Image 1 (cartoon, rainbow, N blue to C red):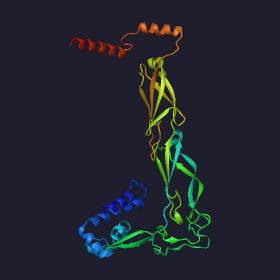
Image 2 (cartoon, one colour):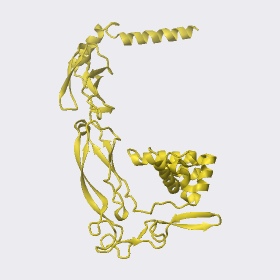
Image 3 (cartoon, helix red, strand yellow):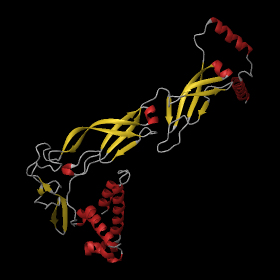
Image 4 (cartoon, rainbow, N blue to C red):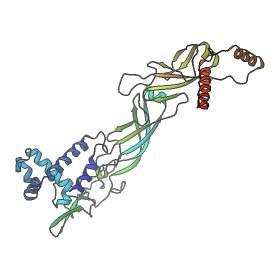
Length: 356
């Protein structure tokens, strides 16, 4: 029983079926059924009375007719092979597979949102047979081996075991005159165009689920889902962290020393002015409020962080070199307090270390 429970629980676990209310409900029912069958008295009642143990509050632990019918179905569907009972559900058409599509967008498209037009190959319902798998005018018939149930029973000693019907492969139906277009599968492969709304604020790895847009099921079975996974293209200037943006801006040594204004372009196409105070050091960050990315399903907007890097002058002319040398000769500890303090502390440290 534990093996059957684990298998069913894994199949319907919410982590494996995100945004699937039916799977979540099934998972809860499986857990409830397992708790009942784990109880010695309740298990004995089911072994003795079968479905009746759960009907009309039977056995003192049922929850009414609805509960009894629901639990009976769950026990038969999930534990039928183990317990040797035949449930009341037939094979039925298989659900179509889910599809995955990786969509790469730019930071600017993530800021504004966009409508992406996709073209993807997928299985769709065969128009010739309307998904039945049979030629026009013909119909599938119930499988004579399993009686349309999709499973067959075999007696082995005291145990009765159910297996997938080998004649119809669990479909419960036999097609004598298969459709010439789809060869009896009820679906064909075609390229399909689809418009997908990508909301503003999506991040790298965001998943968009389009219910019923996956592959068509076999012989008229329900369609699977389509999952769009968003991938962000690297941006040449901005780095993103959630709703905040970061940008490194080089400034000259003179700008850092004397201060001034720096104009920076923003992701919305505008421009932000950042005031650089006198004596700004390399690595200093400045926040520009509400100039980051919009937050998904929210009216809030992140911030833009400007990190300045002081650029060392290169390729100096003779006159520029002379001026810098003159500046250096006029400098003092107050001009470069950090450097002066660092070397003074280093000197004291090693002198004291040598004295010890």
